[in-house]
Length: 269
Image (cartoon, rainbow, N blue to C red; front, side):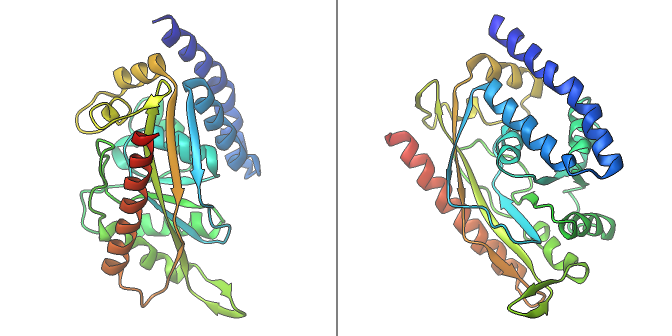
């Protein structure tokens, strides 16, 4: 428990002073509103002992919607440590003590994922983030898994790209075309304490189902030394004529392939 106490104290020591700085950055629309979350989550990864291995590259073009699988609250730390992203999160997150405030400070968009379609207000908010040049992360499964598999992607969530096309236009090849770039990304937890993280133990890192957050957080703090593989797939241009169901299937297949490959490589390493 000594390690848990020391890590928790260190996390509090960086969180408390950075929260008002981020709030001020948002109020004044300073460039630091993007830089602070990246620096903060990189520090969190270092304190928690999370080591990230990256394959591929994030697209530097905008607007960019990043579609990822979801296995743990650690996914937030890992992806933000790599890029100045904002997240589409379940509305329940907004009401969580402290974590809801941190999500709002990172300008997360909160949605009711039980509804079949996203609301016009939610789509407008996602469009605003994209138009400002923020990569938006969408966990397309609609929930988290046990880390051993990729769940089916919800086409209604990916369909948000269609809904924001009317608000976003980018230059492409000298022509002004409405398009949103969508890039698949895989997150796979492959190691723990320097050893391959096999199927039975992967849920030690994954946070899913009815697991309580605070005990899981304390367990990750106690263990540390988590190895995660992040794989960026080929980006796809989504236009108004793009079939969202076909797109969802293609993105799901890509993320599943990259995840399986990373998990197999982790077990065999």
